[in-house]
Image (tube, rainbow, N blue to C red):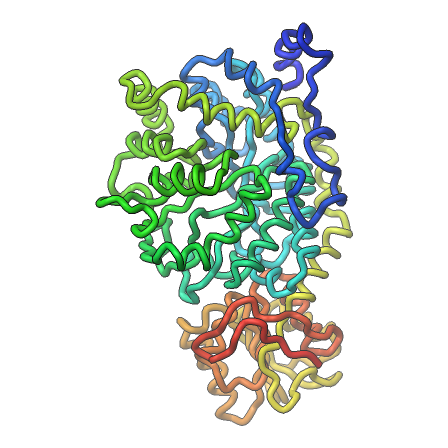
Length: 557
């Protein structure tokens, strides 16, 4: 499909070169050769097709390449008006667009065919938020624990394994870009939007995990996007619904939040996403804007100071964190003025297109500035083989999702992440046949897993109560389960499935396991640890300040 659309470009270049030179094999190492760092991404890449494509575009086509729009419905036909009207640089999938592997692959093939029929026939970035853990869009495929669980393993090979497996499944259904990994350093236990999406609170360790995952994604044919610059980990406001203000001095930001992004820049990561956060001590202007539309932060710090010349994308532009002071058209223009390349999910694509076009026609934006961003976008598509990629095979996609090696990979990550934080009187592991009652969050999964591990699950008369928690600091019900059992003299094992901070409100619990994730594979791993089938080996990647427990804590048997 797309190779036919781009054939005239190859013919034109044949007068200067023997052939179109960019193929998937030539733009990076093969999977498995370099799983722990994206060094291949840092190699100089000279585009061949991208400049030719840019030269043939009119202004509206160029602006289209700067937009990644929300996919519509579940079929290519439902996306035809969007693609024909805006010729976008990409689409992003959400849950509502997806059902099974074959349908997802057919959708991807169909929208790429539509893109090939427009203008210069430039293939789409097809993106998704498939971070794993609590941020997933795919209804099929392997579910891994959250990033904080990976941080608890301390093992970059497991981080790369998680990303490689995820990328393999995404590529099988035609998704060529993932808005991951999360490079935020979670320094605020009350963070409502990052939390266990972060690898932890140690910036250097987070950087190691980010490099491992970004490299694995790129090596597996999926563009990684490190997010959210300049850092979303030190806030108690969700930028989806408000504007977080992070009033950190520059030196503290550099020490605590910059290292993962600096490492990603130095390694040549494909793309970086901005954050809708207000950081007045980084912006420096009298009336600062959120980082996404701040020239001081994006063009000044990220581009000039750090030297990043890859694709910068916004976070979703339908979020309230960036819409409080300007209308949607004005935001679109300010995004480009700030030094960003791609507008993710502009809520009114028509307004964005019109505003940017008018800004160019009035001289507020130069067409050369637009060309800079379009060339970055096209160069990345060429570098990752997207411009000449063959269509995926929908009939083969399901088998990839059901590969037993993928489930085994998730099991390995989950079991290595389980962290034993408290074990009073060596309560754990429980002996075979111990009578346990299971209550709380995830009990429907924990109970059968504990039974499979050789414990006797009962409704009453228990010797030990296993309580699943998630967000217990805000749940009197979860706290009550623990306190009532302790009041009756029954020892309690708490299984925390979000951030590990629940210990702050149940400090006297006899046993405390941190999973950092509520996915099925993590709950099964917890049951096996409780029963002694697996020894706990994880270590806290964050402090639990209210319980006076420091990062690095992790008991064994």
